[in-house]
Length: 442
Image (cartoon, rainbow, N blue to C red; front, side, top):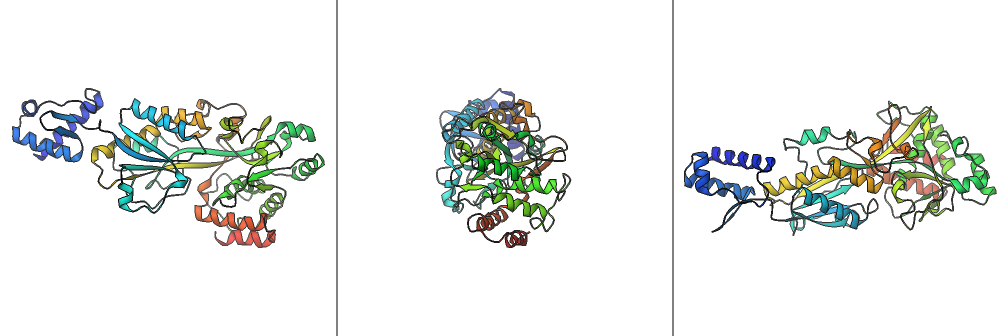
């Protein structure tokens, strides 16, 4: 009988892939299957019962057998609402779920409302799976973590994506990235007579720039730094990397972190510049009252003047650079999937298909077009992003550029660095002490 189960399973899979059968379609009768596969009625009935337990077919007493997959399953999708509104994200997911006939009902939730310590019983209550969008280097200790690495097409899917060295592919897959550059308010720069093109990655212009801003009664630069946030240090990382590259303390070929990393000439310059930045709960650069932003994400291509809190006049981007090369910091969001311990093989297959849809070219192009994100797919060129322009091209890494990933520091280190920097920013701690303490944990 085991041989017939495998034969039926392969037959149904081929029929589904060829389009001859769709989820919910009626299957041949047992007598027809007996004739097709030269088996007895009892053997066919027993084999179909096994396939029902696997979730491949659904048997309805007195009405026949049907290809499984049409019965809706419910999942929770934990989303980073800052990247795309709940309404738009849900509409995008529903559209692609329907196009691919996955019969999955999605309940969208804010990832920051997620309880990372669910019990197994709480995880399985009402939902077949949880799909969680995780910031780079983050994971959740929730039962049922699935890698899908056992699927035959997993390697094929993986090869279609860019390589992200800090992502543990045993627990997650990359979904999208944002990158960060400097931004200037063009109107305010004209007011003080500052030439944005003169702003290089070595920041030798910083002193004269801040003097011109103060003479014009303009805040030189601002960063949104919420004290209840765990990892705001990433907003300072592009500045630090730019200074280190300009001082030749790092190179594009560097793969590791050498100590001292902070207590260096570039690190001292870094703290001096931080002393001239306004750190605040709401970023005044986005409301036209400061001249410069230090960590403007590629999301600005879609969000500027499309959100009430972001309305920058005459936005001018300027890439961080050293030795004629751009410095690009990629901050990548990952997908983690947690399956209910009682989920059937067929329903798990549907969840894997949904993950593949999310990573597919059509979904990626549409999602990135809405958000200003950079696709993780190798076959989507910068020019194919809907928001691409000559100015916004600065967000994309090119061959020979300095390319860094926010995961170069894990979340524990980023939280530690954030806390140490707050001692300097808000409590005026001694710079030498700060630089030494930043290096302690490396």
